[in-house]
Image (cartoon, rainbow, N blue to C red; front, side, top):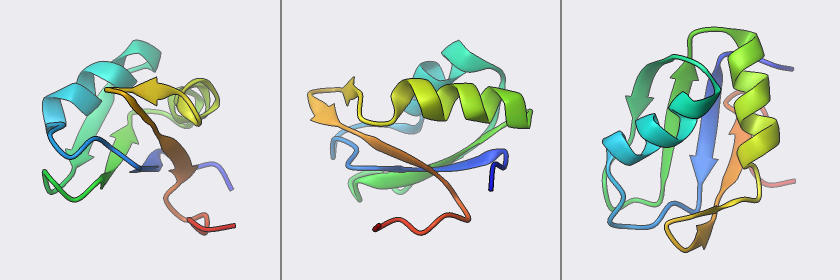
Length: 80
């Protein structure tokens, strides 16, 4: 089910919230980024479902800071 909140996995350990905000901001306004730096995962909340769908479609499986990131809807199981 599509929602505004996205799970982002396999993030480079030195990435910061600003990196995710800039990356996802290409697809719409980012309302919130929740990430403990160094953990390898985080959550990004977009301002609309449409922006979240665009970001997920474009970024899931893409390269970001030399890592292939996974982007899922936050309410979707992470491991399928």
